[in-house]
Image (cartoon, rainbow, N blue to C red; front, side):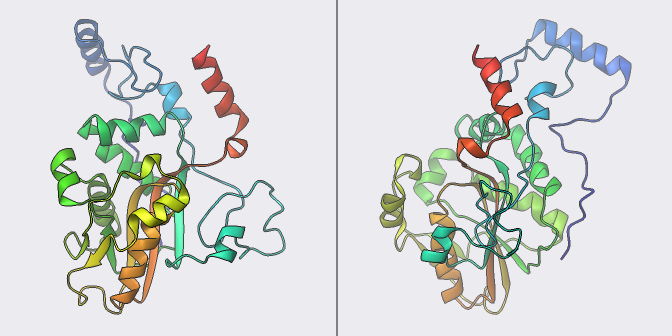
Length: 278
């Protein structure tokens, strides 16, 4: 299925509103101030309830040459000039279990602040805008039969009370008009949080952490895995292993953001962040 690049307006970039509504919002925020969750500037007249206009302008999709398998950005624009299917060194040495991965935005502020606010501060109003950011930057060739969010272990789900990957997958399924599988892929082991682990520790931490309850929903189908952040790809890789073992025809992965080296971040974004720190 091909996603249209002209997606609906993203809620993080709201449409124009009537003048009377703008004045009402200004009066309300004079009494109940709201700050940008990234730079902490007051949102007096800004129609968005989460990010100021300057921060929203910094949320830019990844561009330039990237690995044809894991979507890791390359430092040089000449990396795939002669070989468009060029793969990064890691994928050449240790090919992942998934057939293709796409990552859409760099995991840097202000998007990083928005994702963390949803996951760790329960700002549920950010779920729809983040999903719409994903829809806005969907790859052109995205063929799938079934959407599968990366699951949380029940103990983690009880603590957080929601699965951010499922919330994003639900919105995406409405856009792509494809079903979502929410219970057939499960996390069977309550692993340690991945955020503070090295790559080798992540591999050991997630080994045999996922399993499939029923192979029938996956047999012969093209699966699209959904997660919020791509760090090392270990989680997606372990999920892809069990889905292929369950008979999936293909497993592709889609994440909203990925951690990247600072030398791959556009200078204008680094300059803006430096200005905030000053």
